[in-house]
Image (cartoon, rainbow, N blue to C red; front, side, top):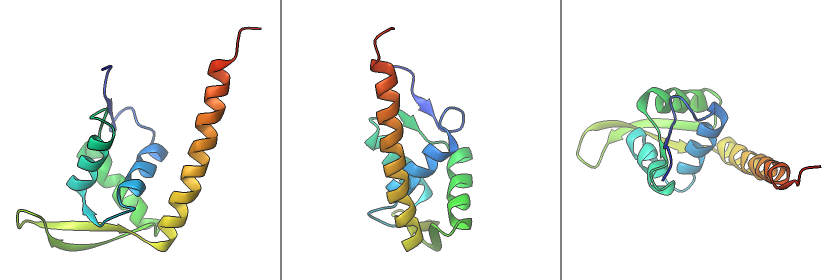
Length: 115
């Protein structure tokens, strides 16, 4: 495996936002669970640090894409739980479509023979 991507330095803000929205698309999660979900789904290639995760969650909340409430975590600790709003689900769909177009365009460029 190559170098892992650490969100605090290497992941572009928009990419992190997209990954967080996706992590919240099926379930309400607290911050640590969001970071764990992303790490597990990326086979530990993306390591989202607190210094990047919580500003992203707060940014998404300010935009109305995510809402939060306090609750108890699995180990009975007070934690803030985040969930996608309707606006957040629409944004996730738009961002996935944009990401698919981006990946396709980059792939075309990379596969282009010299000439």
